[in-house]
Image (cartoon, rainbow, N blue to C red; front, side, top):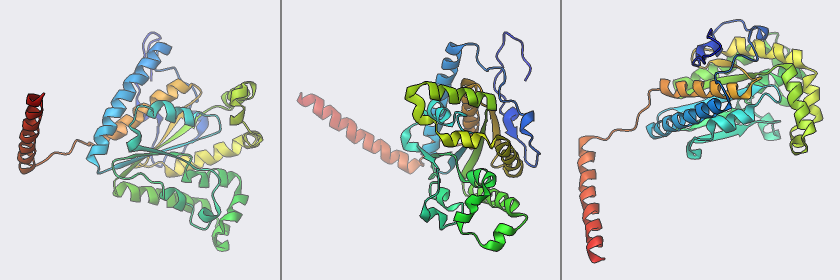
Length: 306
């Protein structure tokens, strides 16, 4: 990722991709890198251009109606998931995009396996689905707070299995392979924010009365488990990043940079599916031309009456 001080290098998404079967150590992945923009004006210009390209690709993707795209976002509190979704996807037709956020599971959801509630929200063909948190909570917050498993009513033998977490990782990998085989492309983003930057963002939420609602005591309780979460994320990324459903570790201390990286990855994913507008056969074309002649004549008749 070398470049001169006066130049801005294009985004190489492979630099942020977690390769399959690699051992992830998050201290080796930076939370901040040199920006991919020269100024605020340049950032706004790049983001606007990206939105146009993404909108064009999404329109074709929707018309193609053969694949779907699932985008997963995971991160520590205040890493910027909401703002990334808002700024990157704001130009996409709402008809072809759905966003779901997953909080504490309901009683009904706890009566099913851990993949059930998110499976209900998977995107239809031609649509983009965004999960703001996801089934990955089951190997992150649940791993940091294993007491949560009690409410899941799992078979006792299963909870005592020394390979319990490995089996959960495998369930997720198998699930994502199933999705890929059936036309749903999966890409996953871990917004990698530093503990210091999280503290700064928490302070802003406290100092700005209009943002107090974004902060809670629970946020601080989870912050106390930072090292446990980093360990859980390392295991998760190491075990579940695959060729067909890769993880991307996005430096998130600079929100603008993170948005440009995420946007670039999403565009490449849509391009990679090689979608196109549906083509009609010759018989259909002839029928359309006949209808065109009828409409043209009706239009001419209306004009002659005025």
